[in-house]
Amino acid sequence: MKIEKNTAVTLRFKVADAQGKTIEDSPEPMVYLHGGYGNTLAKIEQALEGQEPGFQTTLALPPEDAFGVRDEGLLRTIPRSQFPPGVKVGGQLEGRGSDGREQVFNVTKIKGDTVLLDGNHPLAGKALRFTVKVTEVRAASDEEIAHQHVHGAHGHQH
Image (cartoon, rainbow, N blue to C red; front, side, top):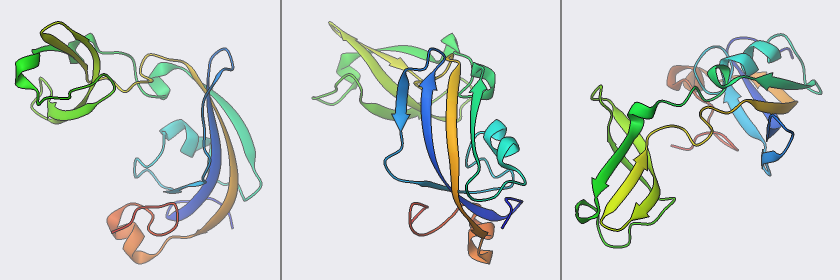
């Protein structure tokens, strides 16, 4: 079966920086709903459109096609007293961005009485190389299409 809108695509992937250093090598396959639902990067979907199981490719993506350019407006410095005890570097919390939308912030540094937060994706601003191999393609169920994501093994569980 070819990859087209409303197919569930199973793939293995590896992410490396522009110099080839591995950032992530998926131990489990990833499954996403193909067709513009935002379940994977747009450039990856474009490269996989019309392909079949066994297809493999490596894509070199600039930051704007990967996880975006860094936005220094997403950096926050908050008094440590506003956090519960045990706040640690690497922790995450949800807050509101300057536009009022929900935003995930990563704790990047704790310095004395202040906590530094970053609302950028950890890979924002980086050129990345994605190596993907398609292992399975199937028609998505009506429920998956309605929910706009894949259910079941390696997909979303309800």
